[in-house]
Image 1 (tube, rainbow, N blue to C red):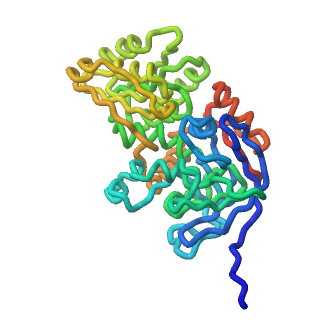
Image 2: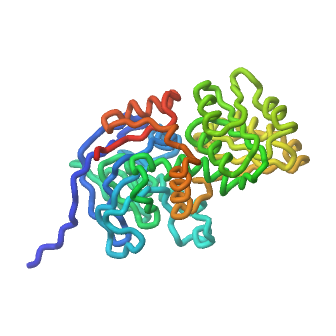
Image 3: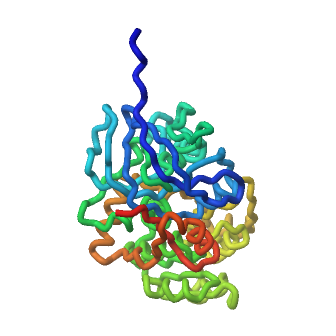
Length: 376
């Protein structure tokens, strides 16, 4: 009698969340080898995003125990038999996951995949399987198709993006979500045009990425509104022509005064309904407000219906910067290498055993974009 072939596995070290609110627990887990369409990546560093805390705190329902992390960057270790675009040794950034077969995906609208929520927040592959386990059984994974708060991650060929080997890999992970969300919202979603005015409501990683992108896009009036003075100072350094401390000044009145009637474009990245109302009210006639902040599921917001209707304002939702990652992420890397998109100024590095400190510093506003490093 022939023994059944065994699935090859490897030991990894990863941060596991086992209950609502955390903490992240560093544990030894077992990870399966890649399936035919999958890629095994040795993770070099992973950015920490607001959405990791949203999942940890169950503002979005994610099965537990789970390995989070969705801004991974690393080196390809192994590829499945069907993988074509990536090879072992490639430097890669991991991004969001999409199915590739629903109507929005077939139409090229990858960020609006009909299966986006289960693929990115379901804690498993599309077929419901997981690849990670401990001594007690399965640990949920495939968070944003990657679960990259670990020394190794499994991703699909679709959500792995090759980047130049001469770029600083440990810095690039946040391009997979937070940075591409802010920059893409400006460049792809809002389509901010040269000579226009833009107001970012929220000065975190997404809002400041939007400020940098607005400068690249040619906006001539760029306003950053936040309540943290250090963030506002950094916004000026990154390209904002004006800043508004919303704790001291009415941001709607300030934006209207600066622009002479209202901003052509605004972006709300705080996830607060009251701030969204400000971002809408601060628009000029026929202005456009983009929403990228992620509040708890079911959160509702209000606005003046006639104030929107009679001025032709538009309010649009934007996911992951409306980006096609294989095209957009390399373009952000090139802009960074040219000195035109200095997102490294947002970053502070942490070791894996400091991951809870990284989360705390992010939530307190001490660090704008934490990146957790996994060694050389």
